[in-house]
Amino acid sequence: MLDFSLTMETTDAIYRSPLEAMGGLAIIGSGRQHVAHWVKARKLPSYAAVLIEQGNGHLETDAVGRRSVEGPALFWLFPNRQHSYGPDTDGWSERWVLFEGSLVRDFLRLRLINEQNPIASLRNLDRMQRLFSALHANLLEDTPLASASAASVLHQIVILAAHQVSQTKPSQADGADLSEIIDALRKKAMQPLDMTAFAAEHGMSPATLRRKFLAEIGLPPKAFQLRLRMDHAKELLATTDDKIELVASKVGIVDAFYFSRLFHERENCTPREFRQRYSRS
Figure 1 (cartoon, rainbow, N blue to C red):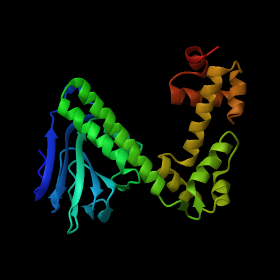
Figure 2: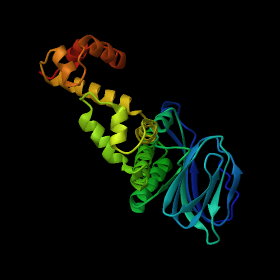
Figure 3: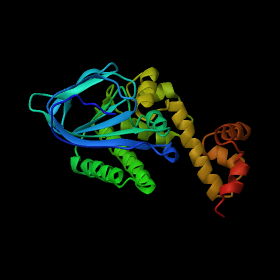
């Protein structure tokens, strides 16, 4: 199934056919090896994560071109996308996992894995190694419970790698720290807010602000503000006896009818119905 076409000094690989019940996320292969030569112009039918424990080299894809890989690092491979990768002259030690399933769509939608930014430099190699080892051990056990556990471990790998990417991004976004801008919007989310003025306050154009927000959290600023307002509204509905008009006002929406319509569009229920379902009083 996986043909590295490499000279391998050591290798340890295992493959599993996915269980039908594991359609959300299925691990179909895992291994560890030391390699000295490149994978060239290959396409996989599944997703893959490749952990480079030690060594340096390059990754080449149509999406990003040729990128340096300096271990420790992890990179993602995408199904039916041609890729080449491999170490420099000294070789490298790698672990890998193959996976598929409908849950991967959520990873992509949330930008936890990203074809345009497939490489994560790692500062906590030990934790990532332990996760790969646990996943491989689950595949060796080969039971339904172990398959579910392997999928859970992969989820942790995805989250850990995403954290590493977010923490190594350049902190400056057109002259401003994006995390500070997001925090500023959180603090002002319940207030009327002119996004043009807000962008200018942080030294960028509205278009740049929108692009930065989309890249960081997957939402434009206005949609992010509305999500914060609706989340706070749900908290108020569930934990207070405030009238709907007052809840709307507290989240920065003057028109209670408009608030109710927005709420219904997002939650598929009215504010009163939400309160009936989730009230804690």
